[in-house]
Length: 247
Image 1: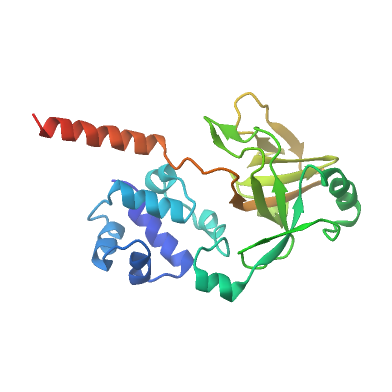
Image 2 (image 1 turned 180 degrees about the vertical axis):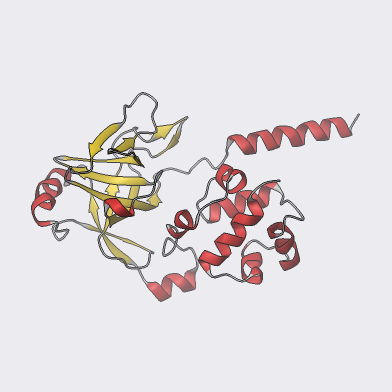
């Protein structure tokens, strides 16, 4: 049995959605959704894919582990494709760092922590203080041909070291360097890991002067690959069952 039921119930709580409202989004019956949440039934693969994509959660994560409240909270106030909600909230201007202005931003921010000189991009997210958009410039966060590619834009909110969560993807500014890595906290230092297997981790001390923005949204330059190893296994299993049923 998967964790799908527990996870969608937790998602509903974080998003403040009733069973009926959640079911309507995915063209499900409320009773069907209730059966999923209570573990009396498992969803079809197309339903799993729709839910995972809608909330920007990997299929493996929504099925194979109980997602924490902290992980789900990172989606609150995020992107919306609901037209009425976009009209209601409007667009938020977010300071934007790219290859052309990064050196100036790094130099000025270390002194003033000011975003005023940066160009802005407009995105449909709830307004928040100390947000920053950063253009990816390398393949460091790519693994198995998936991840963040040059031209993609990550958007995060400024956080302190005490607020960081293991596994979170961060925009990091330390000394005269700015980059994106996945965060882990050890007993004596922070570890910033790349997704690419050939790129070594970066260790920084608690006392080092570093700034962090926790990534909550991503603008992709290309159409993403929504498939996963789990989905491939499911498709292979369905094909095998169909083959056996014909014998």
